[in-house]
Length: 265
View 1: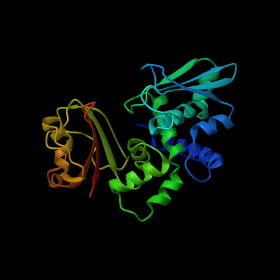
View 2: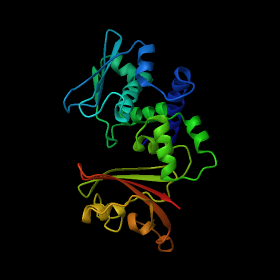
View 3: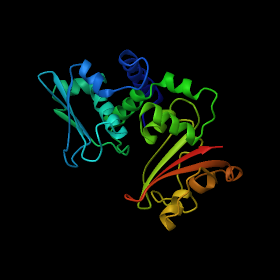
View 4: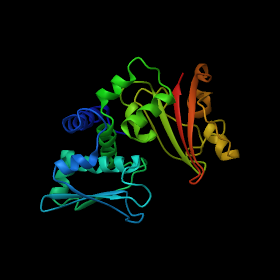
């Protein structure tokens, strides 16, 4: 998890770039690359990477893998923003220029614990979802999944990328839990989320949750439903066991996957 200080630095860097090239409307990463003289290629590169940035003699080139997604897909846009992060973040660019990182392949699944990849992910979400614009869009609006969907459509970003940005603007404490085949792949939360530990056994989706119901019976819930702190979290004080939260799930039958969005009432 990035420090709050580093999140602010990367957010300000990304937003300054977004505002310079696209002061209004959605941000187009490929156009930013063109204006910086960065060449790029969309293509089928198998399953080896989602995005890759290389440099030779000071010239940078970005590869975006479109084996599973079109160039206009939200996933490809985020991948492009991620690779631009490796260029615009000074430490990343210097590593490429001096040869410490001759090429930089990236897989975008939000599960990486590599600091460089976390920073590029955060840069991408901040580039595509500039903080001051998001705050204006959220002004005086309660946090709901409909708000997330609206922002996702407006800025041409995935639900996950939109939530990752919302986590850091002090809109509302949020936790995301990504599960596959009954096991938790990763989880992330805003700095002010009240609980930080998921229930034991570690890495297993708790049964008394919407995600747990899906893995047990394939039952899906389209709406956001009430749960309590004790359903998802460990080390909950006795007087807070029934503290109310909402859970909303996004499902993928193909991958036996659930993304749980958890927030307090």
